[in-house]
Structures are given as structure tokens and as C-alpha cells.
Length: 180
Image (cartoon, helix red, strand yellow):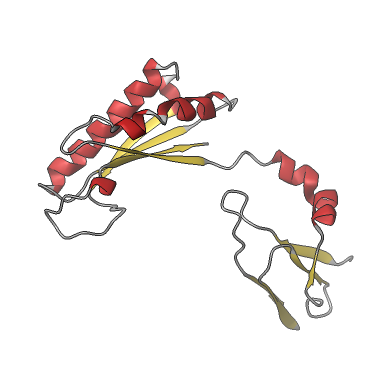
């Protein structure tokens, strides 16, 4: 049986590279850098770790990497206090979101509403949903099919900036959009 090549590649979205340990009953090898590689055989430990060139990665894996769907894009829109009205800066992002969605053959758009910790958690869940629905309406009015948009709310359950209860924090009043 020929050796199996294992290569650690950077995340296509963030560019960061994690770590991987390749092990069997004979030993192990730690991969911790972009394009770190080792070969594994059935009768021995993983081979020494080397770094593959970008050209070799493209030659060996280019076709498979090209077949991957594009990395998701993330957008964050912010809202005025106790409102489902976007800030001016967030309104200005809408055309870019639309271009991103329209550039995909089968888009999926996930819209998640969030709030700060002011007020009742149950009311904040409803406000987060109201904000997400408001953004979905903006996207539909701009020409996106409603069937491509999924709407949900986390209310104050997933704070961007951790705060105590009843704390006004503009960065927590947001809708996060993932386009994939």
C-alpha cells in the first residue's frame, strides 16, 4: 500500500492555520504550520514533517480545493437603541451584502438578531427577531428570494461585548448575516 500524504492547510476564510497530530501505533507527527506535511505508511510511524510548496499543494490538491464551495461571508449590521432601524453605517453595507448573495448560484442567507441586556430577556428575544425580520425584508425588497433567507434571534443570549444585565451596549444591538 502506498504512503498516505497528510497536509495541513490554512483556513480559506481566516487564513489561520491550526494544529494537527498524526499518530498511529508506531509514533506521531505534529503539524503546526501552513502546508506542514507528513507521509503515513501501514507499517511504521508517520514520516518526518516537511513543508510543501504552494505550487505542490496546487498541483496535488488544486482540483479538489477548486471544487469546494466559496467560504461564507459574514456581515454585522447595527441598530439604533430600542429600535429595528439600522444605523447609517449599517445601511451603507446593504449593497455589498446584495452583491455577495447575487454572486452565488445557490445562495443561503442566515440572519440572526441580537440585543444588548437592557430590558427583559424575553422581550429582547422578540426584539432580536424583529430586527432580523426587518433586515430580511430589506434584502427581499432588494430582489432576494425569501426562500434563501433563514431568520432567527438570539436576543441577549450571544453578546458580542459581555456586559451585566440592564447595560446599554450599541455593539450588542446587531444582526449578523452569514452568506454561503
